[in-house]
Length: 413
Image 1 (cartoon, rainbow, N blue to C red):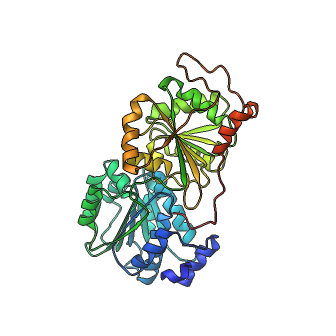
Image 2: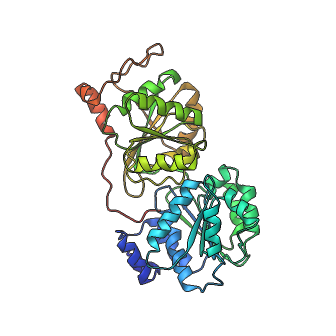
Image 3: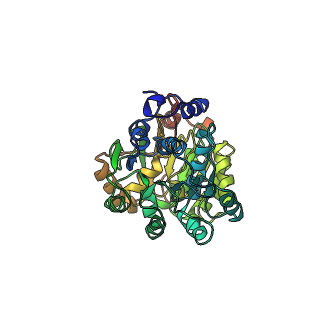
């Protein structure tokens, strides 16, 4: 099914083709006609399936077909849980609106308010924002009474992060007569509650199974003691065929510690977490995207909304306690039609969380051991064996982690 059959104008279809995309993803095929038709929509899909484009494209169509109500009055609001996701939505909209005159501003913390306020004063059609900074600016600089289209992206993540009171404050400032879109990876009872509050007779579009890991991700568990996790990680990453690796740490301090040890071992690494300034976070992401570092160590701030093409592996250095967090983490690889690998280190303390995940997914995850690695707790790594020095049998184990080529490119969110 081509994009032109989804109710999008030739101008928007041309922008899509100019960007090098030809075929819509399933969530785009299912959601775009409903949104273009004016319905409220709940979109549920696994991460990496093109959810952002699924609302950006029809939103651009709706903006083009409705007159502006004043130069200084924004008509659309997109709310996102993290700065990184807000910036990515802003970038995607800029790319897909290249043939339209759509003024937009991204509003989030960690950077100066002044450029954001100046953009609002000049006048914008679309506000892309995180809840905290938007509320700060609503006191003096943002008027939401002209909003006709509201999007709550990664709504489940916003609830996980405790943003429900802020979301309710923002929703109360919106006109009651509006089109509302809610996108999430999982549909919990809490999501159903806020959907009942904010949406009117929504169309529910669900792609794939709820809360199950992407089928394109191969998953393994590596039982290991806590004291040996860092050495095991260094040994795995000494294989250069792991080209783009996202490592998850439970804490900010842990992420910094892991990054320091990997860099000391000669593995190019950056860290991403909420204690880093916005400039530091942007620099870390850019270095990872541009392959200046091949490992990014992150807390769950990166589990949602991080859109980096070609992540070959996700490694859960600390196993997440909740199945939903596991799903969102491993969804950073195997995005769209690509494939990827997810490796999780599991200590005895993690076994209850593993059992909970396996019950939820109805799938037993294979347990493995790295051939030739000394798992005894009283052993300390003296040096890193380069991948080229592995024995043939050991290389055969490591080589199974090579990234597999993605298939035909699609519009990605």
